[in-house]
Amino acid sequence: MKKPSGRLERKYRIMWNDDGGTAHFYHPPLSPERFAQIYMGYFDGSPVDAYLCALGVNAGYVVNYPTEVEGIGFIVDRLQEAESIGSLVLWRHAENIRHLWETGHDPFEILHQEARRLGIDFWFQL
Image (tube, rainbow, N blue to C red; front, side, top):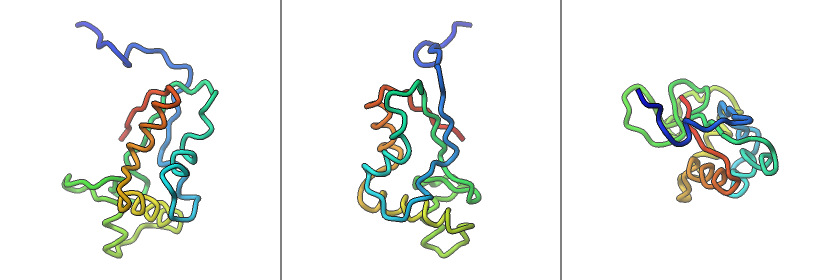
């Protein structure tokens, strides 16, 4: 069996594992530029070669993007349906995600573009 080519062959110095980010520490609303800076601003000039991005946060079975997958919910829908988010920290996160989507900004695309600008490989994780 032949090994896949591309990023799977690359050796990384540091792979940064982001299990939900730090945007939940910042009061909403966040601009796209501030969102990118909060998540990736400290990577410029660092030995980080790859960024592993979580698809959601620890608020039950939710993700940070609209989905139709059975059993998984969009955190913003949960917020708007007045379901339990879990804590103030997760509420801030959901509000920041809601604001970005409602203003036409995909949070994952923001992070992907920032990673490209910095020369960092961008990976999703479940």
